[in-house]
Image (cartoon, rainbow over all chains, first blue to last red; front, side):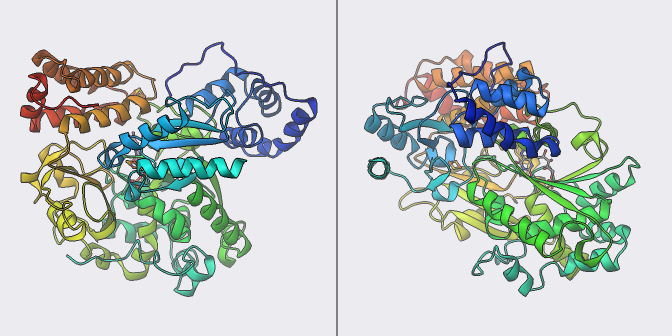
Length: 171
Length: 421
Ligand SMILES: Cc1cc2nc3c(=O)[nH]c(=O)nc-3n(C[C@H](O)[C@H](O)[C@H](O)COP(=O)(O)O)c2cc1C
Ligand code: SF4
Ligand code: FES
């Protein structure tokens, strides 16, 4: 979360002009709600899977924030992404309660099953693994979120099953 | 001590999150009574007399906070519910948000009336998908039923409450960082003073309270200040606390107990003790920010007085470690958390948190030296001057573990313990 505001820009994803116009209309309501930038960014991300460069431009124009401000906000929060992400972001908790209940094994099993390191997206963009801070679900230690869906009491075997069943849904 | 369900009284009910369920048992009657029949000063007096203290971890007296906000002539004033709940080992707010959203919303309405505020914000961490859905729906129900909006509950008092989501940042639980986030900015903390009571959201007087704090308010109005005070352990503590248990313990979960229950009761009676064949080694009374205590200290009370043992009560998220757990590894996990969550705004914390991680990694890999142990201490000293509470607490679990379990750190350095992953 520590990246400072630089002159970097988010990646453009070649949004069609119609999508950009649609977004322009979609965020008009936020003009009336001061401070609602994060909510506007959620709208963007729900549509495009990340906050691409074009969307930062639209938000800046419509809501009146400098582009650098919008970029700075996007990069501050770990749940916003400037790059296209995977369909399933597997967020696995690495904090203490989950740790003493086998989180390391769960993470290793997910990495092995998908052939990925934490932080990486699979080539087909189906999966990404993230090691994250406490998810506030510690009674079900160790915990994994598939996007926002909670899966508790994880084991290496259960994480493999989960990945298989998510793959099944996709095909 | 038996479990006492005040804050969590509604959680077991079927469809507990619906307005209909909440109203069936007298829900919103206290907000209505306050707005229609009490003066704001009377409300503040009752809450002050109840000795309710903020459940967000700092235990600041709630009635006094409201009095300060009301006493500031600057308007508009704001009410903010802090549902960022990201302290490791803590999940009590989540149950309230998911299963009894109307309970804390009623508390917010009473607070808004008390400080004469017409806009409230609820800030919930972005990972809490179900909580966000339920609160959004609860607000919709309130507007439909005239509990929120213009002229609430058939009175002349107007109140809007706006739901906002965080997006993955522990620091946004810190009140001034939360205000920045609400205003559409990066979640860096602000310098204090001015304090939120004078300068909070939009630099206006603001009362910010934890979800559980707000959830205590309607029961206090219903049953009275004395009743609430008597719920505590009989010493200095008023009311109950929803303790969360996790780690190496048989039963995890929430236990609402008189504030000031001992760690022994919580861990052994309610948590059922350690898994088969294991013994208690240590516990962290209040999330990652709290330094560990040893098994010998298990008779301490879980209340703010725990400071005398060099740790904090924090959120009441008690993390239990048994004899199979490595203290050095647990300190490393805490250090990783703070490194990731440091907002990077000030140097002692931005530099100190990764330094702690690197040194602990060295030690865990059997490559540490005795000098590294002193280095942990001196980094801690430099972090004490951090800008906000995150950095001011981040080193304490590491240095605290070193003080209480120095032998174990030294064994790692001498290469006597299994080299960990
Ligand atoms: C780093 C940091 C994180 C915090 N996170 C939370 C949180 O998630 N929830 C919370 O209620 N208070 C949190 N606090 C405390 C708040 O700043 C504030 O004191 C609290 O919300 C006030 O509510 P209360 O008086 O009801 O306790 C945090 C403080 C710090 C320094
Ligand atoms: S102490 Fe840490 S979290 Fe707080 S302002 Fe400094 S860098 Fe940010
Ligand atoms: S420590 Fe893993 S969810 Fe809390």
